[in-house]
Length: 120
Image 1 (cartoon, rainbow, N blue to C red):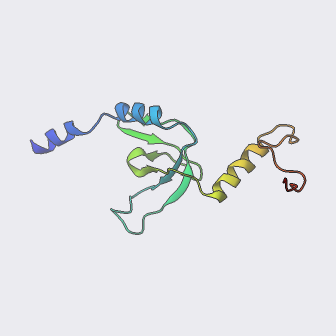
Image 2 (cartoon, rainbow, N blue to C red):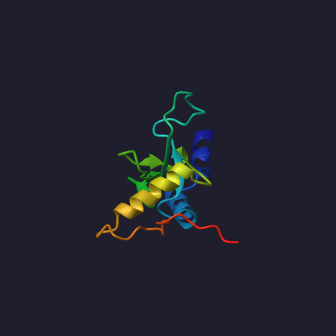
Image 3 (cartoon, rainbow, N blue to C red):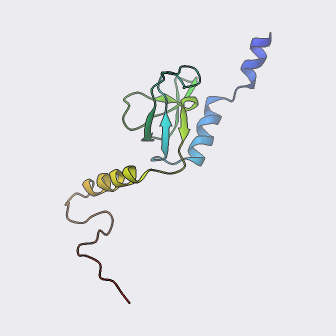
């Protein structure tokens, strides 16, 4: 009977998905742990990445999201949101946005084209 009551305390997957999607848009920087979380296995795989989809319910039982750099979905219980991206990640995002330009003539961000002159 205790097991049955404990199961009722868990949030329904759709509630988790709705809360995640309301708080975290696609592209949110995350740390994903496919398989095991580090507190369960000290050798757990850690992927520093960003989401590439909205969260969804997998087969009616698990709230999941897809991330860049991993081919399968990952349970939301195995995803931690990162608050800031590193400078290298920001540069990579700029690179990806620049490559998304169909004519490849306009950078996604205004890059300096000449050395900046000091102003007095």
